[in-house]
Image (cartoon, rainbow, N blue to C red; front, side, top):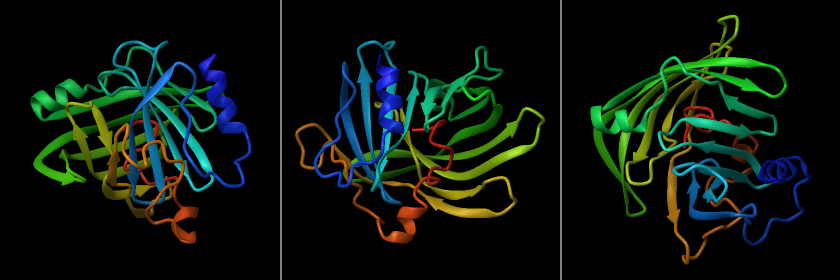
Length: 235
């Protein structure tokens, strides 16, 4: 039932004015709102019907929700909607492991992806702790180095990204950071979707439907490709 709710949210026209708050799907509870660079606000939530450790994220720009994704307790991306549903293929060659990253300082990964439209791809790369920490809005985060390449099923490069991200071991979440991305045309573009505000239940701005930062016309138009990795793989 929840998947149909999500698809309906993604496919429905944006409201003329999204004043107020975002509402989670039935049976789900939001535990964190994050305001980020690049005119994006994200809400992180858990749902009763999911496995323990599973977490969802919805991203909103000035037009409303544009992306939903789900990860498991190891930070493996499980599924996303943008609005086409994409899922992690069974038996990854090298599964992503949040535990390995935190314990050993580095995690490599290689896995397949399939979309409901019949297309597929393969993602390969690594996350590495740099040993540096940052404090953003009172929250201490560990910095990572990330390198990512996505290939189509013929081995052609679809996109590449490299740069830095942030992790919080207690939350088992990744957050975007500064870097650059190549969307398959050989042109490296600077990107930065770093978090600027963490808002918890009961605080002003929790569940806000409006992004706060970099929302001029130019950045709002380019707000989607802000993550070092595509939003389906991280955070």
